[in-house]
Image 1 (cartoon, rainbow, N blue to C red):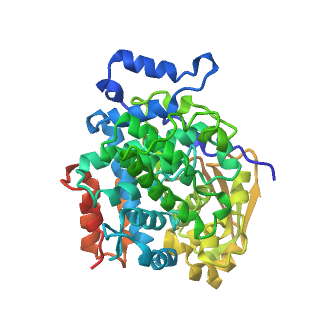
Image 2: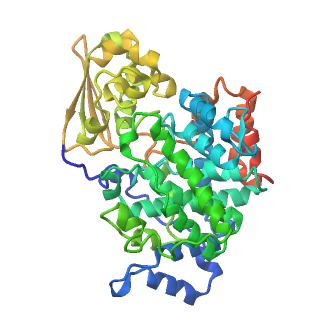
Image 3: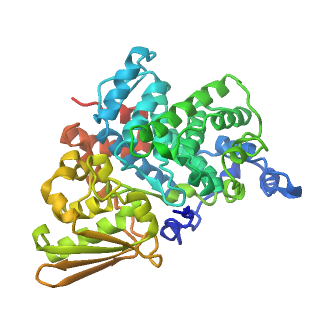
Length: 494
């Protein structure tokens, strides 16, 4: 099958969401002349590549909490909320258990705790394991333009660091936003070519976000931040071949740890090239056939990619979300039960079957890559959370019986974010639902209340209801915390 142009993948979902957030430019702390010079050099005049690494480093170092517009801060808080929920929820998965067992004998001082668990590790191993935990369910945040899961590498890193060095909630949120902004802009510059060749973009770009956010909390100078980004560029991690295995969640975890590693070295004046992102033999030219440096530099401080982050209502790949949304809506509107259904016909974009065409999944993880299972379980349970993608649900005879009635037909006229569903009942009636934009998209975002419900469902059985409520409240009010480490310590099970 030829490569699908993934820039078209859910681009419509992001259309219309590019309005720049209001507020002062992040370069307000520099002179107008300096800002003009920076953006002029970003244009790549005379055929030379722009000084992307230094421009980005300057932006990160000089941008303070007060420079963040209110909508940017709000989305940063929502990003934190979602990440904490999925990290707690995944904390006792077999993958995390194995990582803990493997690394415990070799961990350094117990500097930071794991969310949802009692163990403590050194900050780099804690960041790694929390990053794994947050991605194992494939339920984390998604930047639809690049399919980057932004929070895993960034929040895993700075939450661990905040337990090692005191960090206020405002500084924590500022670093979070800047780290996410960094990785998304770099991702935009090389997507889709970089992704299509086989790189897992969450890992390869996430390391920049982790280094930027950690370096910001450390108070690195511009020169040191240049080196931190350069050292991050030397540590790309993650291949798409890992998808469907424990290795996939390794990638954001490793990106988190690698970013801390880069920032710590840079803080001791461990040098790197000044142009590691844009140089002829630098990161972008080495790992991608596309380099659009304007994506990194244009609109810094006025347009915020981080406001385009989205959150999954369903614990699987986003290409299945429109079909799940349609199935749940029809189920609820018509009070459907599985035994009423003769067949379910889906008209879908080609990418849906390329990524999620498993007809007979055998384990829960495979169910996440099966549109047939996802639609069946959406009808049966009226939900598609992590519990609906368990081994038991995949093997349930009732699920299998309905799954076998699902027919997915490729229709090139259907966009990736759309689906056309027809359910034929045994009494001959036909029910129809067309989804233009599924819940969780930028057009139909999850509400704060829905994020709380998702969080509570993930924490169930790990934290008490009282602990869960208290942790949710700390996330919502992170800007008022004297110490951001309270978020981590509040996620300790009793």
